[in-house]
Structure formats: structure tokens, C-alpha cells
Length: 254
Ligand code: CA
Image 1: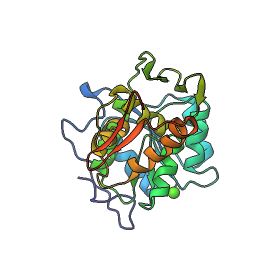
Image 2 (image 1 turned 180 degrees about the vertical axis):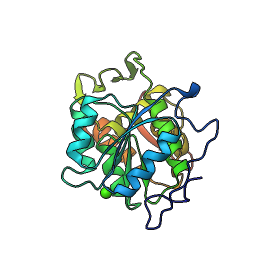
Image 3 (image 1 turned 90 degrees about the horizontal axis):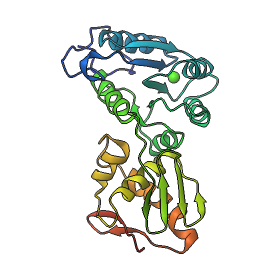
């Protein structure tokens, strides 16, 4: 077993767990992972653990290095530390997304602050993990983000005069183009795939984030507010409805 928590002050070097379901992909398919972490000891531990899981692992210790590697190789997942010297993790993530690099990103943050998490998600990260963390949890989240990255090109979805194109990541209300952050987009897509249905915070977290990492988090409420400011308020609409005690719903006639 790996030590209980990684990224803390005391770390022991031990073996990673070997369980049949611990691989990122079924059938032992080799997964390429980039670990961008300047704490050399933690980076080495992660590398060793992931290599023992039969993954191919590259390590970058600066933001510049991470950017260069992520542009050169199509990684199946990137473990990206928020606090990197030079270009920090947020900026690395932003630049990758701006450059059309869509490798799933799991952001490592040093503290469990909502603004850090939202910052990371808004920069285009798929999920985050707070230090210190258990190696098993890192594997679970990498599995989740790598799974969600499966290529899929569905047709344009329409709810009322709201349209969303998953292929081009574009959203319109009528003829007006609406700019959304990646997480806002994911949440809106979840609503639009099930119009008029009441969705609980839990369901929204599960679908839009693909991982129920913090059931008590108010991250959904925060994002629903952001969405309303973009898809409803400028158009004098109230399509995103709060259903007291149950969750939210997107009304087709709202
Ligand atoms: Ca760091």
C-alpha cells in the first residue's frame, strides 16, 4: 500500500496497491499520464505508484515544462499541481485549453478553498484533489476524468430557443452566442439533456463533474448562479428554476 496521505509533510515510500479494478482503463490498456509537480519527492512517489499501475508517466517540474510536454504528447490524463514555479497550474490549464489541448486535467490544490476549486474548474480542469490525498483517491479520480474524455460528438441539443453544440462547445440563445466556462458548459449540457426534469445537486455533480467528490459542496449553487447570469438574465428569462428542497430544473418554456 502507498502511505495514507500524499502531499503531506511525512511520506513513506511504499508500494502502490495492486487490485484488479485499479487500472485507469480496462484490459490493462496503457495510459499516458503527465505529472506536473515541483515537489520532487511527491512527484517521484506519484510516478512510482502510477508506473506500478502499468501506466506510462512523464514528470514536469515547472509550468513551462508541463506546457511543452502537454503540447507534444496527447496525454490521457494530466495531474497538474496548482502551485508551480513560473507559470502556475491555473495558467497552464488555461493555455492548454486555449490551444485546443483537451487532455483531462486533475488539479492538485494545497487547500480546500472553494475559490481555488472554482478557479481550477473555470480554467478548464476536469476535477481537483486537495493535498494531502490518498493514492487510491488519485487513481479513482484519474479513472473518472479519463473515462469522461472518451470522444463523443453528439448533435446540437435544443431546449426552447437555447441551443448547445457539444462538438464546437458553443451555446446560443436565439441568435446570440453565449460564452461559458468549461464547467458552466458541462452543467448546462446536463440540464439540457434532461429538460423540465428536476435534478438534485447530487445528480448534477455526478453528471457535470462525473465524480461525487463533495456532496456538501455548494459548488452547484454557485455555478447555477453563474449560468443564470449568462443564459437567463440578459434575455429577461427565468428558465433555470430552483425547486426548493429538491434541486434545479431547466424549463423549456422558461
Ligand atoms: Ca507545488
